[in-house]
Length: 355
Image 1: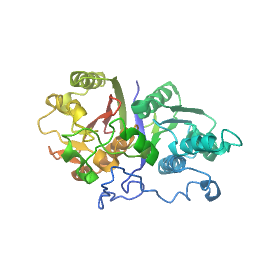
Image 2: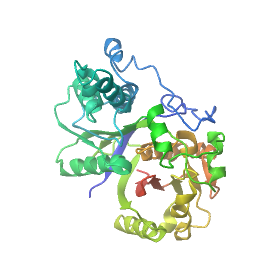
Image 3: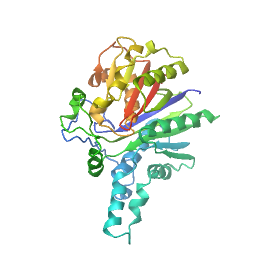
């Protein structure tokens, strides 16, 4: 396909990533096994009257999406494409609780309406007066990748310059964390979250949440980087991950030895460590590896934070010192490879290049 460019990128995460240029000067850590986002002031992006009726996830999605559009200088996107693995858990839980308490009578429809997966798209469409293509993907650990793939297809079909707002969002709730603890999602012995990867000899990880939005275009003016392509695998072996990486690189004529930086989705779970350790020989011996889930926790669209981080590392390579998992050659990256897995044993590989 023709090149697709990332014009702007915005992330809301448990760290100070929304507006701060020095978002890693003060690392937030917890020993509760749950990392919740640092919520910014949403009033510049959302009507204060409407904010009162919105759940945390809706505010996160709208605020992050509107900030990405503002940074790109785009008022009305030609398409809005998002992905979420869970949708609005808060509103879903409230609606289900009301069904039980009120015995399915006289229910407030607000929680049901706002719990639908495409609520964020709808709100952003209203605020930006966008009447173009709108789509939400709910594909668990592939939700972010599916949204970006659809955005690339949309832009490749366009004969004129177009702008697409694409993003992913998920939230963590106490009830969701409790339910998933019963099926072995989380670590039983809790340490500080910043030390998560130092305890990768036990099963489980820590819960997280966040939102990441990007303005994509088929024009390269003022682009941060180029989104080349991605691959998705279900229940893969380490060998299949290696094959997918090679296939992706060959498709875009990039030699494996030319990869300057790898962003890995290690989450401290010993059951998945092999997915990151058996293909490193494909790369240069001094290729630096960066990790991030000790700062964000695990959630279905965490790869969105990884892509946001990549856009930062292209322009500010020194930022990676706080994320380094394996030191390597200290160069400004030209090609960044992202390898991420989710707990339901899905793996994605994504390639980004300097413009």
